[in-house]
Image (cartoon, rainbow, N blue to C red):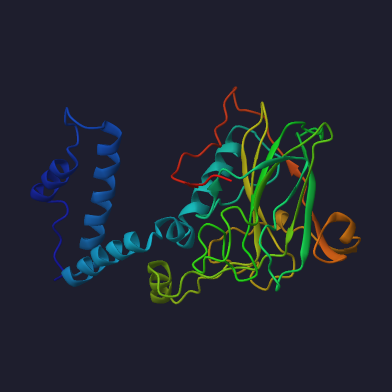
Length: 311
């Protein structure tokens, strides 16, 4: 079609009307954001000569994305969640806030309500013949290295099939399998007794993989373990570590890998005494350093819809 209409009065009036920009009713911030996003979309249609067929293909895709419930997965896959981390890193740097365990993306598979134990939690509730025993342990400290008592450390990860409990399409896992939380003691230490996870791929017939296929990209993640960590007078930490040796560590479709978040995996014996499924087990030490509140506030808390269940 190769015509340019974005700058015309008709289009600019349409954008103002559609977003009700400056209107007395509605939310002014919502109007502002809607106007900007619509403007960027309309201008892209002009600049790239996007056809009506392509526009309606996009609308149909959004319907499928909603039906598949994959919007949060897509946010990770197109780098949106990573971009938010980059902005938060830059905001910290701008105010001179340095140190602490690096943040990285939350992902779409957290479930609130995991049972909280004192210091140690065994979270391999369901048997998994293909996964070996794993102990994840560490110490929560502040920037000066002081152990933080009463810190709340929560972790979650996939099983040997790459499925997370609560979201497992096979129905093989109970709600909080491979999910748990501990409260640290005076020494700031935490420990999870669990099973070695593997990475996962996007549902092959889902909307996210459909988009990735069009981009010529895979939809796979390396094996990893997620964490939320909170403590009084400190900012919430959202992070995860990757399992050392996974071939996809530097090819993660969700862009979550950070060099500081690949702790070594050590083989140990004595698992039977710990109640593990085998005497030989893997151990990962992952120490967590929290940063202080910023002007008395925790600016790391992100409000987003999350699944929840009761233990």
